Amino acid sequence: MKNENKQHSAFSRRANAMGQLVLESRVANAFELGVSRYPIYRVLRYAARVELEVLFDAIALDPAWHAERLNSEVMLIEGDGLFCAAYGNRKVDYCTCWFYIWAADVARAEAAKERLLAKAGSTRITEPMFVVEWTFYGARGELESAWIEEMANDVLRDAAYPEIAGGVKGFIDRYLVAPEAVLVLQGPPGTGKTRLIRGILGEMSRRKSDGEEAQALYTGDPRALAGDEIFVKFITGRQDAFVIEDADHLLKPRAEGNDHLHRFLTIADGVVRSQGRKVIFSTNLPNVGDLDEALIRPGRCFARVYVRNLSAAEAQALAAEIVGEDAHKLARGSAVLATENRKRSVAEVYAALR
Image 1 (cartoon, rainbow, N blue to C red):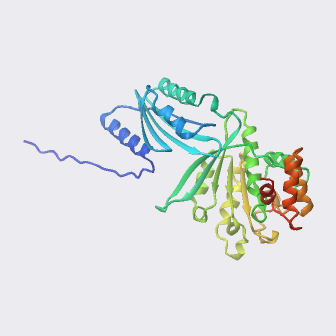
Image 2 (cartoon, rainbow, N blue to C red):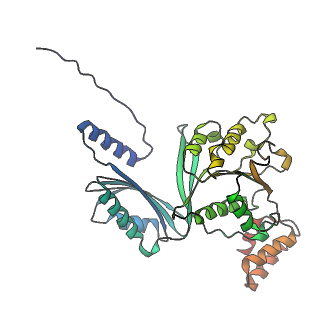
Image 3 (cartoon, rainbow, N blue to C red):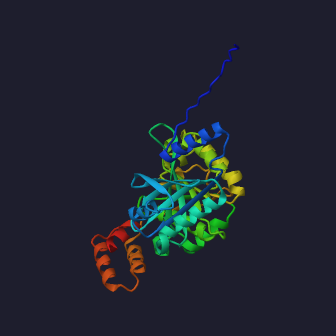
């Protein structure tokens, strides 16, 4: 009897989520059997003004499928020719949900999307939103991402940015149509840098004619910027902007030992600029001269804005603009702001009015 030596191969794969682990196990088994189990893939995301627990309860109890809750924010759904990994995130007054859908055919995938959308009903938020891909180095020493969907509802007031000539809206409009990719926002904490960035991302979403949301790659992790992976992710991805907050160490002159800035110089002049995508830095560096000249040169940098604290008179003007005709609230806030005749951050003005 002839002996045949059979060779077996094995592979290992690290999964970051239970849904990924279950799906990849099923896909591997399907290939072993020579069948196609989930050839169709869709992604659905939406936000709703409802408690995440209530929304997930309604989805989990739908008789069209059966569901398993892994925790309060993660759920796996299975139906006839359908597998879905659902993830939710709580906000102060709304929740955001992401559904990764695999199906045996297009009809099942689209039906699942419609059924999941219907669960939100009238609570679904239809106003413009934008997606932030928060990127960081995890405990295993690997680059990881978490996706956060945000409402584009920030109100930007000209009185908060007296150093921006012509007003904030005009500034954002000019930046989004400009060929230059880079914007640097410089100033102490609490002066409205993050609020301005959110306003830019919100305006990007409003300008999309196809109803899609603007997407931003975001990091404040120095370790994520020490290698090429996050830059490759941006160059090859679909994000509209790359946002780097607290970028003090990245913006210092290369002559002072800054070894990371060259990557930004490359992407700012390459495919990112040709596609109209943006790179936005925020920094607490106190002096304008602390920035590398190559980054902020004309043709590469649209603007370098020093967002400063407000004088006492400017703080009072901002307070008046915020409260409008609410004289009682203005009087209360003005009393707080007048306790010390000193400069105030935008954050302090808003806090005084609360």
